[in-house]
Image 1 (cartoon, one colour):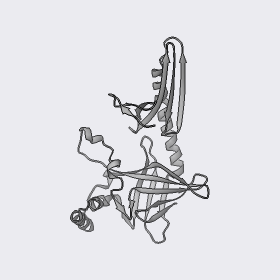
Image 2: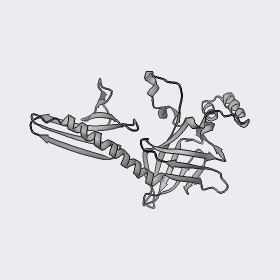
Image 3: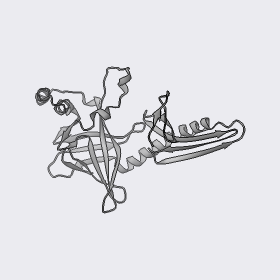
Image 4: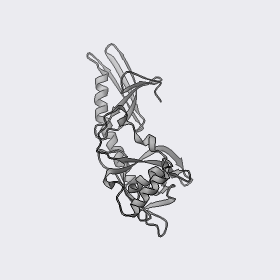
Length: 257
């Protein structure tokens, strides 16, 4: 279920045998791919639409004068996609949101997961490790990741002097599921998530490349012991409840409070 070729439209690709439409959700601006197959002859028409993001699909059959399945399919998508997105958000909120603290004794490390209506992913806030807030350390970690040791050292010295390297309010961190799941012997499963770091900027960039998804370019940028800072492993029990969340980069396991 992947495109074989693109078309002149930014929202349409062609698969085998799919007509792939890319819908943009009005609240979060997230892109959802719709794998469709349509057919029309005379006064009869039909649509099959699969939405892998939600593991759902629906079909429409229409007959009679003035049949226009394209318009009908558009109406259905406009109604169902926001409802499915909200249902998925509420399900994730019930499973994952809450405060998490390090299971290791004597470790001052914690974070909070929450869900905000109209925003995609799980918001990760109040992220602390060894008593220090992690997001404000990005100006130190970023040059370290690219081998700019002198720049990282200079930033670290400024940080030690109490100088703010970046406005913490300009940094947001969101967790997204990768789709990787592994069953466990007790009937539960291990689910992989990735964190996306967004740094808000006052600079307005309207170029073609301003909308490139930064997650692709920063995945595993911060690596220690073959593990990325943005990697989170969630262990679930057989009832779908979170047992704990592990960040291999930090060598820490967090339990829900």
